[in-house]
Length: 334
Image 1 (cartoon, rainbow, N blue to C red):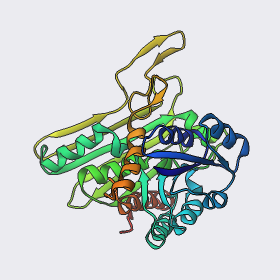
Image 2 (tube, one colour; image 1 turned 45 degrees about the horizontal axis):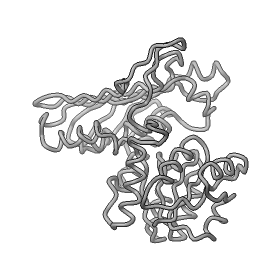
Image 3 (spheres, rainbow, N blue to C red; image 1 turned 180 degrees about the vertical axis):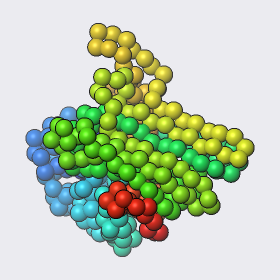
Image 4 (tube, one colour; image 1 turned 120 degrees about the vertical axis):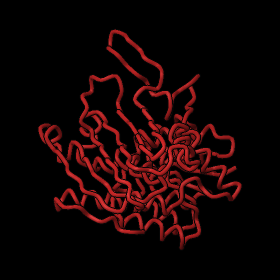
């Protein structure tokens, strides 16, 4: 059994903890959170130990950690755990800066612990099948690609300027484009719009749109935002499309197949990422957490490499530089 602790008792941390608690390969040995109220509540709910800090947790018999903190807190905690030789599943994005991502990768290399970055789309069968189709040559050579997701305004309001939309939401599609096409994004030209968030007193962009150039001459379009009204039936409007020399490929993740019309309006619940079935979490997140444990036990590589995760951060770094400069920016090669 792998003794694992989850760092972060918020929304994503609680989901990861529930997945770990039901995995037969692991023992949920603790919940780590500086907020004692929320940390103790989750620990009691899952019948495990509450630990206030990562330093406390490192004194325990814990083999691995799942870090599900806000993205701007990833570097300090992850580096500390990795330098102490612990393996870490780090919720995306790897970090909110390229320097931070590099520091985490270096700590993993020097400390000896294994590092996996939790990009959930890697475990979404629709995206995984799209990647396989491109590898097989089903649509020929990639000509152009369009990918993105638009979240509801409540997401941006909840974060209250604590994260950029390109890291909290957009990093999914940045990774998907490079992973599925097999081509690195080399150059970006990005523009941001900020009208909705500032009207609510939030210092944040509403959306960022980017034109991108990929290795080999393909071009693309990335879009991400938290600009959709909350009255819609789903919280994320996500789409992915590739046009190739011999065909096209499309992924539409707005509708998971279940539609509910009731007194509260029209709703499309999540049936893919972390649906609850008979009181237990299932779906992509359970598969991701399970893959982490299985790879630790078997010694097999993780589905996503650390280098791929760093490259996604490098693209976002270039996107934010382009927004700031108003000019095209070259992606730092890592």
